[in-house]
Amino acid sequence: MLMLFIGFIEHVTYKIPIYLTLLLVLSPILLMISVLILLVMGRPIIFKQERIGLKRRPFVLYKFRTMDEGRITQLGRILRSTGLDELPQLLNMVKNEMTVVGPRPLTLFDIERLQWQSARYDLRWDVLPGISGISQLTQKCHPKITMCCDKYYAQNKGFCLDAKIILWSLAVPMFGKEKVKNLFVK
Image (cartoon, rainbow, N blue to C red; front, top):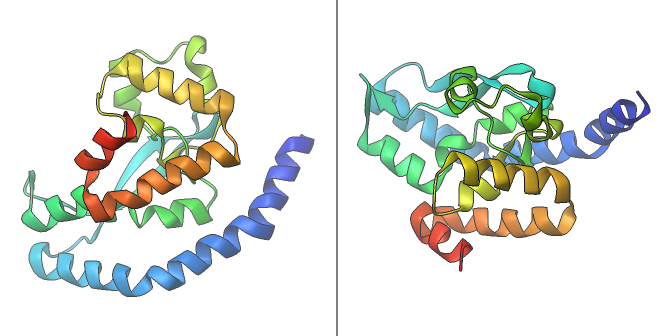
């Protein structure tokens, strides 16, 4: 109970002001992307999907919409390749449903498909999900690799590891996801 209280105080005193500042600084980009989506695809601008977060609690994840009629649009491809589609997740961070670095938040369908419902996978849900994480930066997308990366992060999370992941993640908009993934594993 004490750890929950400390986590709440930490979130209110320093994380929320940082996240709100980021929202303010990024607001011109958020507005520009919103207008582009509105012009290219119409409404809705934001894609919402239920994901599973800390302690396996569901929450609604926000992303910029990248698909129209079941297909990724050209604008959507650009947003995804640069990671800009994930900027609305700052709202999830303000609500303390996500953080900058952590395991990718999965859908219930994904958890069932991967067969990650059992208690042996609980460590993954002992940390807040993140916009970026080790598994998002690795070349291979395989359930065993992803789980190993997520467990490694949950056991070793800290300032230095977070800083390294954030630096690699900041390179994505400049160089693209594939180039950064190739650099990350070297």
